[in-house]
Image 1 (cartoon, rainbow, N blue to C red):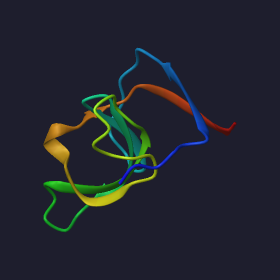
Image 2 (image 1 turned 90 degrees about the vertical axis):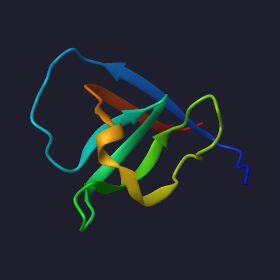
Image 3 (image 1 turned 120 degrees about the horizontal axis):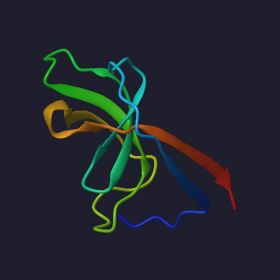
Image 4 (image 1 turned 180 degrees about the vertical axis):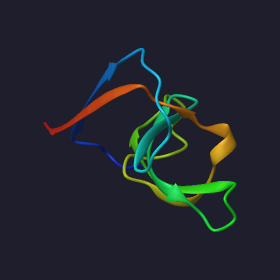
Length: 84
């Protein structure tokens, strides 16, 4: 399913580290995901895509409850969302 996005995304990265507390921003293969917590089995987590990657497999706003937590890394920075 392809969706046309009318939202602008700006990424501002930082170089600091901190303990992971939810909600938090995580990244994977060019995606940035707003993770809101871990699923019951604790190896997966729930979150929404806030920055899409080049491969187009996921779409902006896509929510999943089966992101593999071990495949995500913390995103140290901020994302500015705005309407175009």
